[in-house]
Length: 108
Image (tube, rainbow, N blue to C red):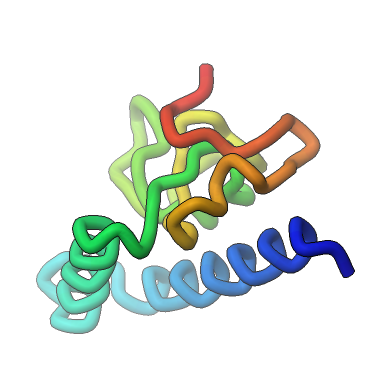
């Protein structure tokens, strides 16, 4: 298995785990959701994680899925360019999807 394939699998597993946590806690008032959001923000600030646009499957984004959506789990298509997943720092642009590589900025 190539290093690239392994990175994609690891990022996908992390994304699936994060999505399942998000799905179980629908409101920001939920202590588990608040804790998860705080941890994600800390990981981004610490340089451990980054937002990767265009790699999430339909309904499995971590946040920001364009007009008419509120946040996590709201993407309407696989690899939607304006929806992101949190991935390990440095792995985003090496991820390949049927629509091309992941992006550190929203795709149009």
